Image 1 (tube, one colour):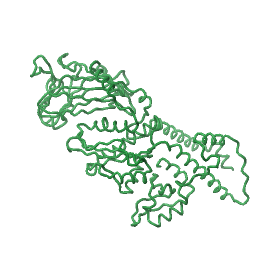
Image 2: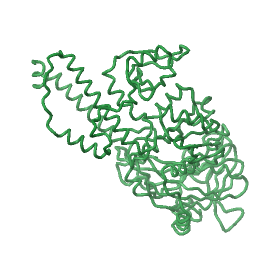
Image 3: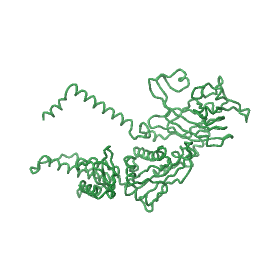
Image 4: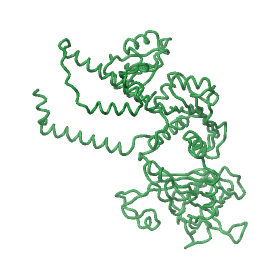
Length: 553
């Protein structure tokens, strides 16, 4: 179990240290580091970078196998510990109660052994401590015995090999972080300490699974090399090098602790219209299956549709029927990156197909379309973190492409002083605040047919690991070539409230790419500051009284 590796590092001080090049049977160096222990048929080492790594014993050369056995002795995975006959057979709760009672009871003074010198006494104490650690190893195994262990692999992505986009690693990281968050709310699965451990073993074994990997091969690797029950793996490939959103996607979630293996969730080759489908549909469904969460029911869907029909539109002026000083109500006075006034590139016009209706027209030449493109923002509308919203828009592309962005923002305290116009636009609540984009939903309108009116509908959920999205804006964007785009009937409605439990369980951290929380970072910074201040005081004033006494002794 990868979670047990911390025990190996603790034991390192009791084992002969030796930096070593670890080689396979062919004499090729496959790892470098200091021997720590043998556990479950694997040699555990600490690399020069300070990382833990496990190497299957049988994959090493005869000389390295012999060295490991002589240095580590008995396999820690087979050691039962120093449990007495009373403890054997007791429940985990009874064992813990006994250990707590023993810990609080007065301990008899240990008589010095005249046959041992000081160094031997220390080694004897280390031996006793090792026995205690072995008990803890077994206790931890018992504690987690009821939970299945799960290992998530990086997805195969041939695009990564050429472009280093790391789409495959993103998928592995995503599943690891999702289970890490779930375990913080309620312990569900035993997971690897990090994806670094998974990648190290895969590199060592030369094993990189894909949808065609036979289940018997997967079972061998998952159960023997990772000591795990369930595996998640798959493949993600970009279809068009010029289009960021369309992918072919495969995924498998299989339980190998039963015979025959049970396929929990599977996606055979499917083509996405937007990258958001990967997480919004497939990853969500896989997590629901694994966590036995109730999938969205027909009743839930009916309620969302009822809210869609009855709740108010959060977009002011989404029909472009009202103007003020020539500007569509609810939309900005300027457009494009260079902030050009409305009237040339962006303008409100009469609908050529319906003289009683007004629409918005974006029109630009190839210099703009093949350059920065043309963007136009709506004014802010309120959002709630974790709630589900639905956006709908009618549009018509003529010779160019269009994307719609929903950008959501939080306000942060700052020394920044917003202008009077920014305050008037509603981008800040008060002086001394600045807005920051913390969520974005990219909705690819270009995947729909051109030259005809199309209605696009898509749901989104504003979330962030550190901030709380408070308001959103629509950004209409046209690009690629010369032409025009017509827009009408922009609607955003809340169709489902946020889950209060999910918000309460939120652990603040900078991004999805790290598991280090803001609280941990602040605590580390505080400890570092305290240590620095203490060192500076000692350099200035000399050692403290306690330290002086210690030196005199």
